[in-house]
Length: 177
Image (cartoon, rainbow, N blue to C red; front, side):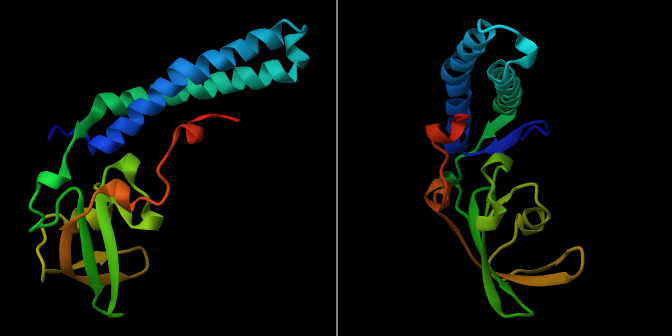
């Protein structure tokens, strides 16, 4: 994999493209029209509607630039085709915290797909980097800011990332109302 590429699932890539198209084809023209209508009302320096539309357009343009860069950098990986005998991109990994004897579950995904609060961690995160290549029964340590934790890999499996997500983004999440 090229170092400048960003791994992601096909579903993650599709969401990026969908958001990009929505912003470019629907939201930006709508806000540009709002700006024109507001501009026709008079003095732009004191026109709150004009200033708001101008700010929305600026935000949309920044987001479009960012999304375009991520789309260009994306490297699509289909984790369903991997065996998941060892931890790899797309693996869900059940860990045993050796000290507390508690289980934790993480799924390794792309940066834009990650939701650490839901156990979806970026392939670039320190924990994912340590886990990659590990097999069931392997133990490892990870140094955190205040503590060093020790884990054992107790299960590795694949489950579609988007069936794990609690908040799949929808078109409504893309708009700026």
